[in-house]
Image (cartoon, rainbow, N blue to C red):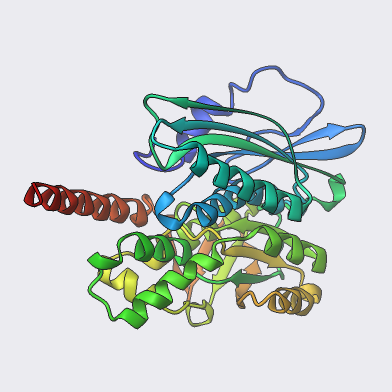
Length: 352
């Protein structure tokens, strides 16, 4: 099993997949590696559901941190093409979070849910002695729709075009440059560009917009393992080849400079807010136009091809692209956080 991030395929296949509780006929799609949601059959309609941890980073500002945490949960339903409609949410708050701070978090989540048409139906909220930021709970999102409308990440077909919103590493770069700006030896303008990437980490509305404009055959948000991981997971799931043009992959302002400074491969770094889509050629222009109407950058980065062997593969300019074994943004965050804590400790000692 991987040391950090999601469990690997081998552990999932050996320990998770064979042990899923009762075998029920109403489970249309259970836990599947590379698929972030499950589906229940409810009177011939599809209930799409997904569960994720909640991460609140106060240093981002509580309102933005709450919006970010909520979007991560709702996105795993939204990428199915079915709009999220209900939310169950559990907060295991650290003792350090005040009532006023939690009120800001909760009211922000309420406002965003109301705007998206999502109702909070149940939950749990309490403070505990051990929890600490950023992991403060978990939530389950649900959306009720039609089975035929569901977009799966493993649905790419030969002939489809591959579209990418935003580009690699926008989440990693936005977070790291905002939380640790004073540790990055970069010009102020570059830091400002990098910090602006935090406004691109919200993908729920983009996913629903693309699905409505389609036809979209497959959709995946770019999380752990970054763009390289998402490409491999989608290709493997569909048993196809993804032929990618590296020059067509967009790189947002500030991303390359921060990744170079931190020695991070931007293609391997988590990038919530970026969506990878396999689109029927007849729908490419409609999907691009719909996303661009939302001011979301989107690029056509390659095509889906048939492959003779089992499984899938990703070729970038003709060369194989492997799935990353680790997401480099995790280690970068840990090192920067440790350095910041050491600096704060020295400053505190000097002030005594």
